[in-house]
Length: 345
Ligand code: ZN
Ligand code: ZN
Picture: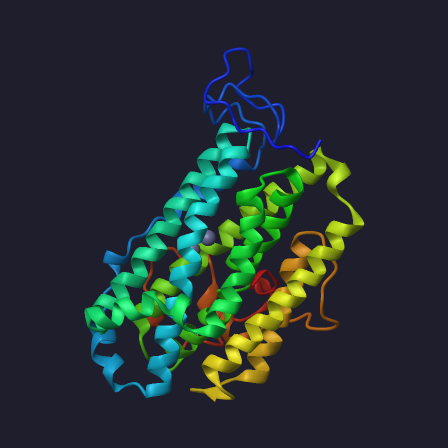
């Protein structure tokens, strides 16, 4: 019952719209007018509309500013890039593995676009590093996941969560791995994002933060896609929607927030450029609550219902298109209101 069947390359007797999100049958022909889930095509359009490449980003100011930053800022900057590079690398591979077991050609298509975006994210880290540090340093940064113990602990948490599914792909392990996915794409990037947005708020490294904003925008769509997949699997296979799964979900988000907070303390100390650790901790707990609830779990932390980093909203808005909004310096607080998707962030 717990088995997962791979999607057939072609099935002449099956319909184009699949008979189930997992363990279903589908011809594997992709006709967007004849797919199982009505949300798939709008999601496809939004993912395509996000298209960007690192080459669009002008790094000339960042190149001048990086050497002038403090040692602490530089260290935090590079360690966060090192962390993101590991997470985006394994994410590219994970997306492909999940796609193999989604018995629906349109969801496979969405996972391929998702994986392509992860490749671009990885490229962007090389692009930033090659602009600001020599080659030997770039290589060191791409090795931080191995050489920095705190980074390793945090990343092992995710990679072990993915390994369960990669080594033993069954329905339960797929569901568990999606919890880790939402932690990776929807929580573990967020103190890093806050660090870069805070630099931009101080008019530092604005090119890098623009790139981070594009990545953030992609990740929000990715979290939304995995949320849909998770919920559809449970809807079609309600026997897996168990108290154990719910307990696992809440406990895992709680543990993830703890690791994220340890990491933030390590990287930022008590304060960096006006970004205070108590505020960042509250932000991480707020995000953990929000993500847990998105998957239908109980929020792990009492309280933490509103975003304590109100200024960050302006930097995280997802539908700005490609306007170079970071150049508009006085907008930090002006666009923060409940009407502009505040609760979404
Ligand atoms: Zn990514
Ligand atoms: Zn992603």
